[in-house]
Length: 114
Length: 118
Image 1 (tube, each protein chain N blue to C red):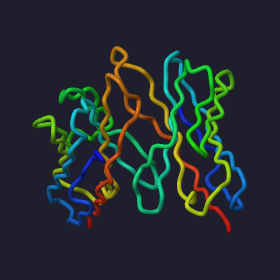
Image 2: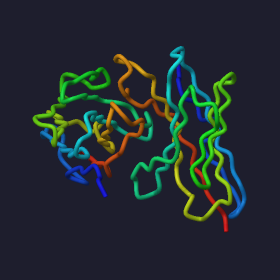
Image 3: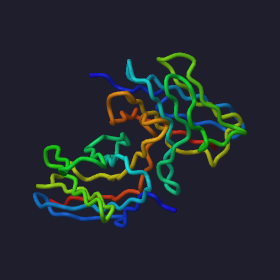
Image 4: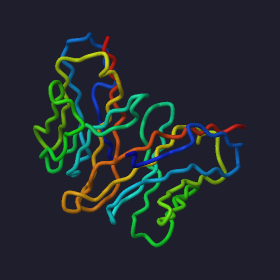
């Protein structure tokens, strides 16, 4: 049963600290998405990769957020420095952009910045 | 402009009854996909059903069906024979085909919280 995995599942950190979230997409999937969920904004796209290349990161605050795919099995989302307003659940999703419409979501990382 | 609108913040339904969750969308792209996801209190996002803009028939998956009315730009989710386990947040989402037809990102509505009463 292939699944998207995300680590850590929960993270509590102090303002100003660096936070790195990791995602392992389903093997063979060539599209990876990072979404953020907050009560106020709902679910919104942060970044989108296809074949490891970033296609859209317009939803991401560039001054503090960065997203990368060092290889096909790992996607990272980094926040430096973190702020209380970054507190949210961060979801990674992957899909096979060539043959399937479905996006498979990971369990999410719940981030709390104090 | 909001692209996905879910006008019902919360809904109640009696167990074993059917319920319709509303979703309207806005796009100028002739090719798009519509999705429904379920998010239980545990937080995971569970894919329920998909409807392509060119699909002639309404999508169905078990107790879930999508009432697709293209001219009205609506994609309502119908859950038949509600169960207590259906209590959750439900999100409608749209994917516009872009980047040369490859799978694009999802645009989500604000969600509807469904509560099933015993």
